[in-house]
Amino acid sequence: METKSDANAVTALLRRIPAVDELLGREGLKQLEAELGHRVVVQAARTVLRGLREGIANGTVKAFSPVKLEEEIAAAARASAGYSLQPVINATGVILHTNLGRAPLARQAVEHLAEIAGCYSNLEYALEEGKRGKRDTHTDSLFAELVGAERTLVVNNNAAAVFLTLNTLAEGGEVIVSRGELIEIGGSFRIPDICAKSGAGLREVGTTNRTRLADYAGAINPNTKALLRVHPSNFRVVGFTERPALGELAGLAHEHHLPLIEDLGSGCLVDLSPLGIQDEPPVGASLKEGVDVVTFSGDKLLGGPQAGLITGKRKSLDRIRRNPLFRALRVDKLTIAALEATIRFYLDGKMDAVPALRMIRLPLEDLAARGASLAGKLSAISPFSAKVKDGESVIGGGSAPGQSLPSKLVSVHHNRLRAQELEAMLRRNTPPIIARVERDRLLLDLRTVFDEQDEAIVRAFERLA
Image 1 (cartoon, helix red, strand yellow):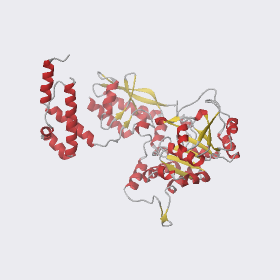
Image 2: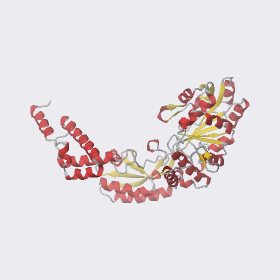
Image 3: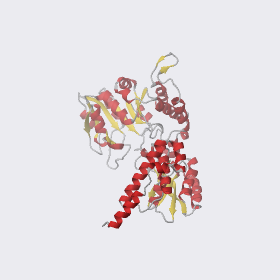
Image 4: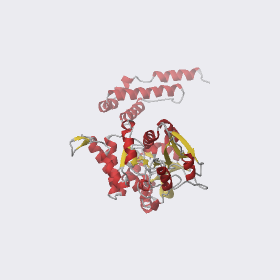
């Protein structure tokens, strides 16, 4: 129960709060105002003072000083003056971390993107003919060479690719799909919902774990417009399972003059099974089996920018290209520039130039050596101790579910602070460091940390100390 003396103390404390103009007259904030601008510093001051009043009113603040207020205002002003979207160090071991932007781009892809962004380009201009061209041409020939596609289109993500394909090829009719493939992708987007919005009706066949070719054949009717195969990229059904081979499904579709559409999601372009990543079929293999249209993401296992790729046979792709919705879903010159640069690495056999693929392929001994070096440097910072332990990295991004890569983790301990407190402090570092916590141990997985970022981690712990 609040007493009269408590109330008087609160009132007295509130009266001591300096005005904004008074604070901005302090030498440190005047210099900051000259650096960041009047508006930013005033807004920061008002925010800090508002928090101070609330803290005094609810009893969490019992005292304050102008010097401390100046420090808080300066920190708040610098934070608000910075960009909201900023680089972070990913020490989670999740290679395609959706919340952290999925696949990082290769340095050369970033350089080409910046080159195109800073000037005019031949985005839709045919230099040889001297007339208007199409933006598709910059990537079309690359995918033809890489995966054997007759035509390739680029839209803003794979959900858009699936939507546009179904809207073009199956609007007003039915699409036949196995019940075991009615998946939900990130952000609660579900295949049935995308089908419904596209104007295509969904005819489910088979069961959750077993669907046979006869199930598809028995469901084909005069209203059928396409067969749909969905790769379960973010889950696995194991045990008593069955589904027809892709070639058999393509044969059935073509026997009835229907297109076979496959949503591959993850966008795998090379065979990753030698690296221990199973059940991620490459796009080219599906096209060889007779699939008419394959859709997949650009920022997952492909390792490029966010994009939705639609590739396959010219007859179907030309129809999709003529859909008015294609213009609403198409990508800009920056995406095309980054995608073109990334695909050229595949054609040149330079897989390690693609960061996501390089992280997947990192030898365990390299991670162990880097981990030992970092653990030694962190242990030299009192009151921290660190050691290397065995662990696992994951692909992430809705790819290769249930599979992991052996890794080496740096486990960090503080004499007084809990791992959750350290994790929060690292998140507030500049640049932010995103780690993981297991069994009250802070863990750093260097598989997803670029070599040149190791020293930034050391400096962050020095500041924490």
